[in-house]
Image: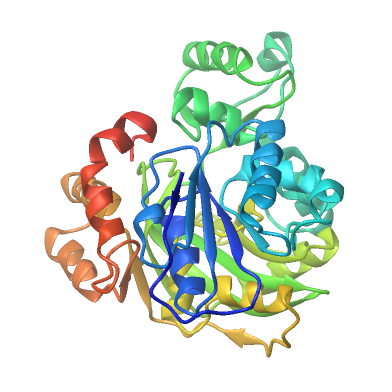
Length: 398
């Protein structure tokens, strides 16, 4: 445990609890801390956010993956450090799930912007996500959920095929991968059996591979409330790490895109959603359709792109939670975000594979308007991330 006071003016406003202290959490810490809002960071990993000048309090706990442990850590922090009434900011799916299932326990102590499980389940379980998308007429990739090997053998598949989990946190933790690409029936049988040993029956998905690179990867991001977006941003996720099935974007840029917005608002309205959300799409070059892939009911890795483009999602959610009126806003197009630590290896792979020229890649770096961690006024997180590179490689492959 470590306590430090930020170099900001004092405030009587409630603070914020950021659950997860990597670069995504750091963006929340800086957004709120610069406004004089006290921020507590809780993490079970080596956290770069703890070194930020804007972190009021940093707590290291044993586990933020188990539901009971997550809720216990939050409540214990409230009791020991007088965090009553503070706003919760989860940064991982398993934390979102734990909060949503335990809202009745947490809401007496905190402001909880995470919806209840009846809403969140449409996002965190892809079986529900795709079911709802199909009902609404929103395009998705072809997907199947065979329960066993016998059912697997009845499918008429076109290779390559993607093997992925319906609920990703357990699979990702065990394998370090978001999905597997298979090229033959024998490889599929092996991967399917391996996935069955990791996730429960019925959660292994088979999905068609939509061709294309980062130029076909898009997202709609919003602060959504009562059927409308209080803040919104459409983005092209030009590069991701790992290249094929990215766990996180490494380079993104804002665009204008009415089609993504229309589908996303339809989906979120049907969910009855409230809060911050990113909906990921990939454009299928074969038919031109933008096919829904994922829904992330929380901040996302490049959410600080919004602040650079005039829409600070973290600050706006905090303001809504504390009773301010929010005028609708939209991110301006043509602004780009970079996480250099993971984009360099990704970009070099792209250059080697001739998906992008070296000159084009260097030009994209020069054009980036904001970087995920670098801030000349808050250098310690950037220095600590450099020192943690061996740890990050061993822990999560960056």
